[in-house]
Length: 125
Image 1 (spheres, rainbow, N blue to C red):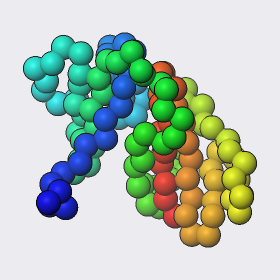
Image 2 (image 1 turned 90 degrees about the horizontal axis):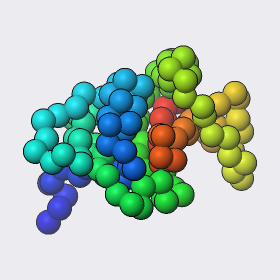
Image 3 (image 1 turned 120 degrees about the horizontal axis):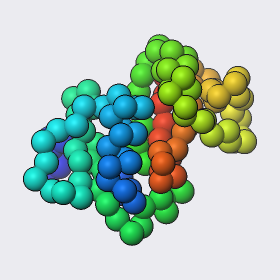
């Protein structure tokens, strides 16, 4: 039923203008037209991400959105850091960390938060 339909990452935020600046200027997403004043859709590759104002913003304690950046992980992490992003560090079983990048086998990942505390990830090899 839904296997042929596009899914959209949906992230609650407290202030739509602060979120718009972060996702556009820091993360580098392109905003799409919206008829909703309290929501902004963004283009991200062949998919999209929707941020919307909610009183429950920042309450999710798990990863809200993940970007697969393949072999560009180190470059993406450096670029985000140059824009003021601080990365999260986690102690996970079987996972090693070099700087801000966590590794487990062939998979490497780095996590960071948006201004509302939503956890975002970039993964690669």
